[in-house]
Image 1 (cartoon, rainbow, N blue to C red):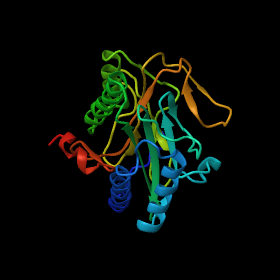
Image 2 (image 1 turned 180 degrees about the horizontal axis):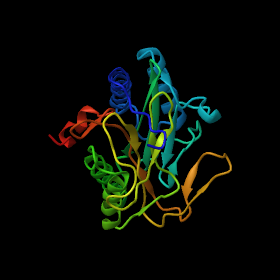
Image 3 (image 1 turned 90 degrees about the horizontal axis):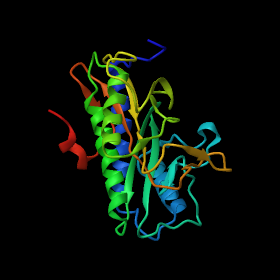
Image 4 (image 1 turned 45 degrees about the vertical axis):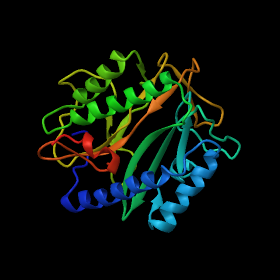
Length: 261
C-alpha cells in the first residue's frame, strides 16, 4: 500500500484529540482575523493560544526549518505565505490561514479562508467554490473508493465554476509525521489510484486559482504565488477513512451541517 500507515484505534483517538484542538484554534481565531491586523500578529496569537491555552505544539514551527506557527496566504498567494509584521490585512483581502498542531505525538492539519468585509463578489465566489470542491472531495471518501475518485470530485467542481487547479501541491498522509504517504492529488480519474481502507488518515487541501494554474515561488523560498497575479483560494481538513465513510478530524462547529449522515 505504498507505505501508507493504517492507524490503530488508540492512534485514531489521539488524532481526534489533536484535530479537535485545532478546530478550537480556528473558532477562537474567528474573532482575531479582521482588517488592520498584521499577519505576524495573527501568527503570534496562534502560537500563544496553542502553547499556553491548549498545551500543544504548533507543528509547522521548525518543520523543514520554517520559522513560524502558521502560513498566512493573502490574495494571489497560493500557499506557504510567511507572516509579516509589515503586512496588515486590507478591507478587501482574502486570506488563507494554515495551521498544524501536535499533541501527544500526533498531528492535525487544517486551513481556512477568511474573507474581509469589502472583498468583491468574484473573490467571494472563488472562496465558496473552493470550499465546495473540498467538501465534494471529502464526500467521495469511503472504503473501496480511490484517490482518483477524490481528485475527480474536486476537479469537476472547480473546473465547472471556471477555475484552475494548482497541480504542484497536494494533500498528504498525516499522523506522527506531518507528511506521510499517500499523496492526495486534487485532480484525477474515477477508479484510479490507491484504494481507500479504514484507518487511513490524510489531508485534502485544494488550491484553486481564479486564472491560470501556473505558480512560482518567491525569493524567500517559501511563498508561492499565481504567475498571473490573480486570486487563489485554499481550504484543508484532516480526514479519517472509517468503516462506513469518512470522519473529518478537524471539523469546526460551523460545519456540522456539511457532514453527510
